[in-house]
Length: 102
Image (cartoon, rainbow, N blue to C red; front, top):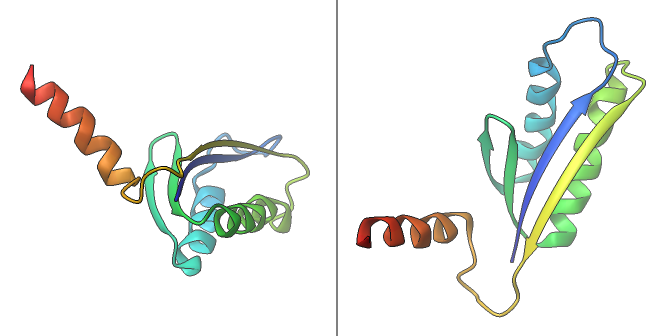
């Protein structure tokens, strides 16, 4: 299972706020059914890598559909294949446990 962090930002818009573009991208992700978690700087997605990348491609196109002429998309992939329990929740739990044990 892959865990992917993505940040999609329209460039050159008339307004410095990008929340409306982010919301449109999140609608696409939500409709995909993939497990995800929004954070202040991006979104983390969990699932099959091919499915995730296909959805990210649609998300990347969303600002263009709203008239933006340039979009910057950053993708960070953690694709672990030696463990069935690789998940967003599991990664956080391991670090939290180490903090609590010290």
